[in-house]
Length: 131
Image (tube, rainbow, N blue to C red; front, side):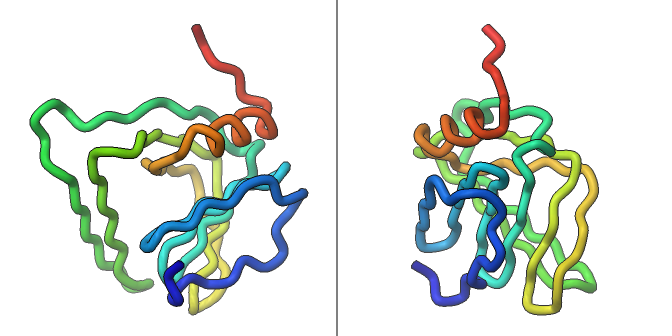
């Protein structure tokens, strides 16, 4: 696990699953999903997740890297083939970083989510698959 992760404090609901990799982590409770990156946590209430759809890179595409710098810091996102990725549309989230706690309005995330985490998110978030 990366030593730069900010410890999750005050997780709402009962902890169900947590997966940590070198550069990101996902934690699911009965009430929220926490996406961790070095120096920042994104807390999303499961009830605020509007949809989850599969996301695939176009055939022949190489890994994607996005760099963004703002007054609040720099965000780098990498997307590599291999683990299944999903696009999450959310109503809002809370950002915890080393500068404090901030609200984030409607947003979308593209995250690598393992199947057991996806099942827990859908179960506790009340999401149903569309056939």
